[in-house]
Length: 596
Image (tube, rainbow, N blue to C red; front, side, top):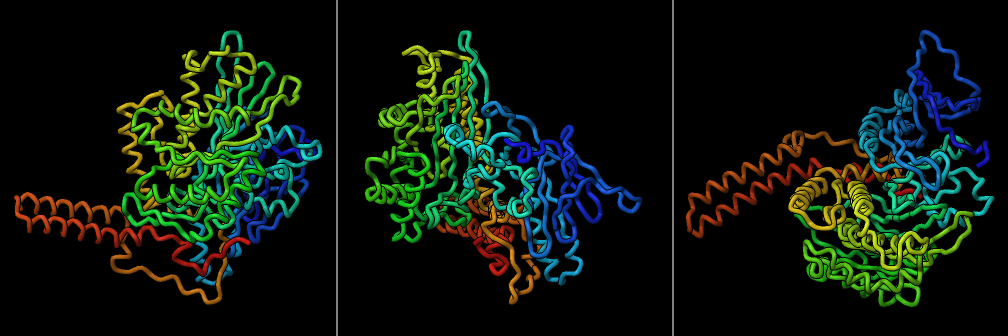
């Protein structure tokens, strides 16, 4: 990369009362500083930090990079990386994980804003504190993390000389929207591309050979969000929880990678959060379903080649209706380059403990995997083999069943790669090397947990099988707890988190409407409605109902009394909870507009 496009890897933030100054601290840099006004967020490059005076004593912080800038109603907000840690390397370049984000307000102009605007700015800016807690963010100063090894190898010399943000794949550039202001100001050396997903790696010895295994997940930002609040696809064919997973093996100068993808079923469907444990699945605009799926698979074909879709959704109940719709749509799309493995009846085949039976699936897809292969370069960097197609896996959430299945496919492909490189013999498998086997399972378990936490708020279910190769009592109990936590988050936290995600990704841009109604003041029950209060009401209703049941004996009428009291209490709780979980963007539609 040319020096003028090289990212600054060490920065100092000078926080003055009226400005922020970001000073490059690279050894011998001598590069200009970035000056950002705290009044109107205007930016300019200056030669050096201005002299400090008694009335302008700054706070000085070390930061790892600039993530971007967000504008709300009146003020703008600078987002920076305050803490990061090195977690490994990608193609020989250091990779860092963001451990702390900081949102810095440039909102002094609010002092002259109308009172109503100040109130709304405060309400929206609260979402930025949620954004600061975003997990699974990674970056590199030297290599483009948004592209797979194969796509990076195929980049031309001209493209490789461009700044990292210009090389980036927009789908996987988490801060794509936040970088726009910096791009407009031509601040290439401050533009830090960030991905959301996971990055895990380990080294192990096989005989005298040292093998390096890396697993990278890249989450797509086009339909980003949380479980329940983002389902299915949009009209353009972008699906919820779309993740590209790349498994890389490096040894003796050889480098080989294998890419898989996951994503929600590619038509419009949803689950409206209504406090039931598993809300009903609803298919939306069914007449558009085929066109949406066509757009989705056409995009996959352009980016990955042939596509084999593996559906892990159950064949009965609400899931069954979605699976039938998916299969029906695919009848109009499948051909030589796009195929569907119909719903596997995952739980019927594997039950709750026998996931090793997924070998049945591998037998169905083995031919596709061998035909479309993987990417391989030798010690000279010459391409010896390329991946010509991709397996697209989905279950309902694209988390738990999907991760178990993808880890199985990844294991089989890694064994093929190691045989091709000459590390493994014809009949040799990973399971014959106990240390390798154990660390490989942990690699995929950590990967599944990190992606799951971003989408559902909890580690992946069935993770004990991925981690240990079998189900455990502790794992089953942990899954039960995680399911309860997911229920709580879906109903009482993820609405606000979804608003924060939409704000960061530019899916909604805050704007003030002329006919904006004043913010209603809460009173009565609404003023004190919150989750603890609602939970207390529900628990009290359970207590009274239990007392009624004890006194009722076998009297049929008293059973009605029990259920009446129970559901009355729950309904009162619901009334409070609905108020407690109101989303800004849903409750105040005049304050936002879709981007573009």
